[in-house]
Length: 216
Image 1 (tube, rainbow, N blue to C red):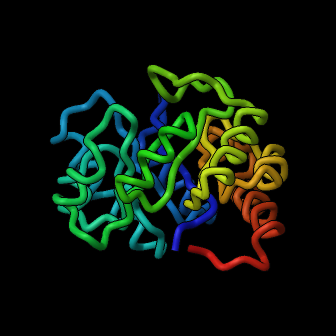
Image 2: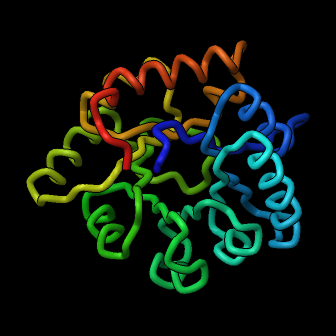
């Protein structure tokens, strides 16, 4: 089952990845992506081990970004790979047949590639400018999502699409109307005045559209 709300960890001055993850879990998030960039694998491993323990204690699912060996080592629920990361088939050989693998995309062509590679879901974005990612792909905006979802329909492509890139609560209804499966957020939860209320509102908005649908 792929959750409709993905929380992506971030680290800021005075806030570590693990603290951000713990806050998100306490607020009610059930799908956590550990995304640590520009750090050696040994550092990421230490964080991943602790993140897995945290997620387990809240019955939440941990997704590791970019490190298939670590995802397998800590028995993560899933792996997420960016456009510049290892190809999904190569990662699948490492993590085995059962682990969920998601892939980033910015175009319909990227989505087609991800489907061919065997991805379980696609993170499509960015919706708008975000400082949480270096080498940001071209911004899609709402019109970009509509265009790509229409291209997918024409091509007969069906895969859960998760909107990413500075997504806010007020974007959810329009994104779902455009045909997206769910959203991935970071700052909208990390810096919310009331994280628990914000997470509850995200799930409420997502549930309005999906109440009659079967989750993947």
